[in-house]
Amino acid sequence: MIESPSDTGPTRTARAALTHAFEAASAYLQSRDSRPVWPTATIESLRAALGGPLQRLPIDAGVVLDDLVRAAEPGLVATTGPRYFGFVTGGALPATVGADWLAAVWDQPAALYVLSPAAAVVEEVAGAWLLEVLGLPSTASVGFVTGCHMANFTALAAARLEVLRRAGWDLDQNGLQGSPPIRVLVGNEVHVSVVGALRMLGIGSRQIERVDADEQGRMRPASLERALQSPTGPTIVCAQAGNVNTGAFDPLDEIAGAASRHGAWLHVDGAFGLWASACAALRPHMRGVERADSWATDAHKWLNVPYDSGISIVRDAAAHHAAMTLGAAYYVETAGAERDPYNWVAESSRRARGFPIYAALRELGRDGLAEMIDRGCSIARRMADGLREAPGVTILNDVVLNQVLVRFGDDDRTDATIAAAQRDGTCWVGGTTWKGVRAMRVSVSSWATTDEDADRSVAAILRCAGCAA
Ligand SMILES: Cc1ncc(COP(=O)(O)O)c(C=O)c1O
Image (cartoon, rainbow, N blue to C red):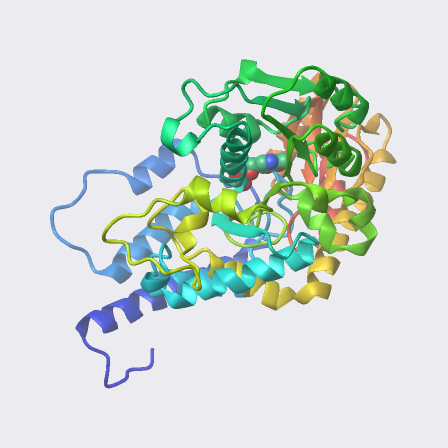
């Protein structure tokens, strides 16, 4: 470590701790691609290694970190490795990890401009770039949240406020009790986080109207049109870009037409699918996306930013602002020329999440982003093709994006193959139930995955399924 004259006691301690963290991080990165993707540690061994009574006296920061690394590492899942295909988990681009570390070192509470001008301007700049790459209106407002669940919540809070305002109800003053009922229509394959977000907004599961979806999980626009014919009040329609199982896109243009004919607010949940807009080959799936009123997506999925990072976007910036802003005597708010980041999210004190998103967009550029998305889709197709060649293996979905659903004969064999593949450790794949049958879910979401990783993983999965590899 380089010593400098300004190394006072606390600075020296902090620098020493970061050196320990850097060494551990480097060693982890070097071993990550070759270690089993799923850890071998048991819950008992982790509790024994990490637990015990809290000691009375302080411990040197470097020792704390070394102990943490030794105890936690056996229980880490190599989610940033190239053969992690679970959930829809992105890797972490190098510049984003560095920027995230810096966000912690700088420790900016990115609520108000006055708390961190740099964090505020980075959000402003990254927000504008995001709107550009996603093909959304440049005047829309952007909030940087923890994930798509909260992005759905934020956008739907703006929707709730605005549809009630149009119905003559001031939600801010009067609250939800006694308000005109809000109709919410969702596709039958809506993601559970939209339902959770609506619940937090006072709209229960039973009050949500589900619209038919087709065999790929796409909302049927004719069914939506029919549902919207019946008497309406304030109405919100939630569409989806990228079904969590199949990757399918709702027909957004037709849905936007129906929503606009009936004066409904259209929200698009595009946790990973929204990134299809960044790639010319996929853009036809997104036709009409720019006609919606709000959008939600994740940066920690396909943009490959470290957890946690989601993005909420609202066409009507005034509604977004009104739904989120607070105001307090001691808040030093700007008159509007500068961004106060807390005005766009349901948080006050908050991590400066803009830095890693900014770093991702700079590291990739527009072309790099398009290439990363395109490559993920091509690897998903390659894996589907490799798997479907084996006897008794069926691909259940049209592989239009980065998701592959694989069935191995029957439910029992499918579950046994998933469990065996997880134990094998070459890659990690999860399971799901799709249209009443069990399936393996393969989600290609990491920038680090190569064709070779895909082939190694397919061979391992087929070996686990008892097919010759
Ligand atoms: C379509 C969709 N919406 C919302 C979410 C929730 O995102 P997060 O877990 O990042 O909050 C997911 C997560 O997989 C998703 O696939």
